[in-house]
Image 1 (cartoon, rainbow, N blue to C red):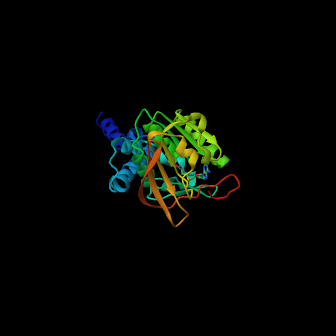
Image 2: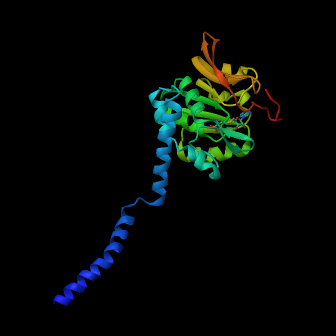
Length: 248
Ligand code: SAH
């Protein structure tokens, strides 16, 4: 009896570490959930350190930046950098804008849930996703077919209120006009007239204007058919090109 109990204790001692190990692994979240948690923490650091720290205050813009999975909008090999304070290449010589720039441009249109917004330059689709969190519907135009298709696939899974079109955004999207706001993420050297026409009275357009090295971000407000303009900061965006690759 005594001997039996002793071996029981020894056996228990031996298997105890295994039991602990099994319990430990059962208590861990699955690998995917762990990664998602790490991305969520990276988003919190991004919003606190890059966005709120630089003066973005609009609560729903901050909420959207905390929510949208930016890592899904960058190429697989660059996911580890998705929440860094920088623009990143997305292929075809184009880039996804720096998180702060996305937040700033979004705040400048003063987004509301009843708004219909036009974006020119879909790129990765990330800016459209942020707008889709905040506005009723988003119409976005991209001239590079591969990018438009890739962003379209991702956005149709995540945001059914985003409509993507392949084409030259200089002409806007006349069938869906007027828009409550227009957000342009490629830079022409002057504001395209069709985009002004498709902006609703009282609406705002946020647009980088100028040649590389000499660009400013403007907020234009349409008042009584005329534009009030305010220069915000110096910026560096890719140029707005026509279908022959010539700069507007
Ligand atoms: N908003 C994007 C950033 C894209 S960079 C994002 O969140 O990732 C600018 C994009 O504008 C590029 O993808 C480029 O191909 C596109 N572009 C340039 N000229 C254009 C034009 N005339 N019409 C539509 N898109 C254009």
